[in-house]
View (cartoon, rainbow, N blue to C red):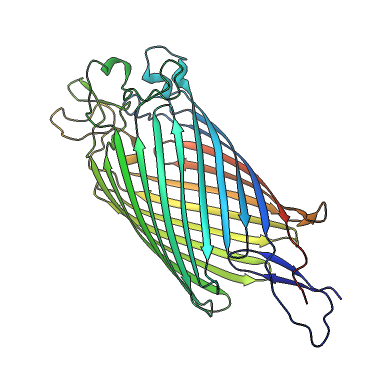
Length: 406
C-alpha cells in the first residue's frame, strides 16, 4: 500500500512508502528537487513631477522585466540563482540630454543573485550567504548578504538575523560601445561645465532582525526591527533643482543617511479556505521623513487548485527637510532636492493575485507546480499613478529513488 507524507518546513518534500515487514527499519530520506520559476512583469506610470526637470514635467515610465529563478534543494542545503533584465523606457530620462528622443530614453538593467543555504542536522538552525550584481548604464552594484535563523524544537518561536551590504558605483559608460568602462557621472546637459561631485561611490549597510512567535494554531506574529546606514553619493547627479533667483544646480543631499524601519506582521488562519495577513511598518530617517505603512491581504481558496488574494497597501509620509517644489529653494540652502519621492504624500496600492496550483505530473518526476498572476494599481496624492502586472510559472523535478528503504 502506498502512502504519502507532506512535510511543511524550509522545503516541501514528497515521500513515498512501500509495505514494510514487521522487523524492517524505517529510514526517512529527503528527495533532492530542482525548481525553476519563470517570471515576467510590466510596470507603467504617469505623473507630472519629474526630478530630472526640477520637480515638474513628465514622469512617464514603462518597464518590461523578464527573469527566472532556479533552486536546487537537497536534504540539508539549497542553492538558488535569480536573474533577469529590466528594459526601461522613460520620457523624463530623455530630458537629461539636449537631444529629445536620444539614447537616454531607453535604458536597461541586468541583475543576478546567487544564494546558498544550509540547515543543521535537526533543522533548528539555518545559515545562508549570497551575492550578485546589478548593472545599468550609469550604475553598478555588488551586494553581499548573510542571514541566520534559529527555530525552537517545538516550532513555536523563531529568531532571525540578516545583514546585507551594497557597494555602488554611479559612473556612466559601461554599456556605451565607445567606452565599455566607467567614465564619469552624468549631469544634465546644461550643467556639464563642471564636476559637481568629487565622489562617485555609495555604500549601504542593512541589519534586519526578526522575532516570530506562534500564539496558537491559528495566529502567528512577527516583529522586525531594522537599521539602514547609507554613506557616499546619495544625490542623483542628473536631477535638476531650480531656485527662486532663477539659478539652476544639480541636486545636493547629505553624504550620510540613517533609516530605521520597525515592522509588525500578523498571519491568521481563519479557516481551511482563508488566511488573513496584516502588516504595519513605522519608518524614520535623519532626512526628516516619518512614515506609516499598512498592508492587508487575504488568501481565499476557491477550489483545491485555485486561490485568489486581494490586497491593499496604505502609506503616508512627511516630507524631507531638504525638499521643496519647483523653483522654491533659496540659493543659500546647503542641501536641496525637488524629488517628490522625498515630499509629503499619501499613497494607495490595491490589487488582486490569482494562484492556480495543480501540482500535475507531466512525466515520472517532472511537476507543473503553479501559475501566479498579480495586478496592482498605485496612486499617490501628488498625482503619480501606475499599473503593475506580473506573471510567474513554476516547475519542479524530483530526483532519487523512493524515500523508504529497508
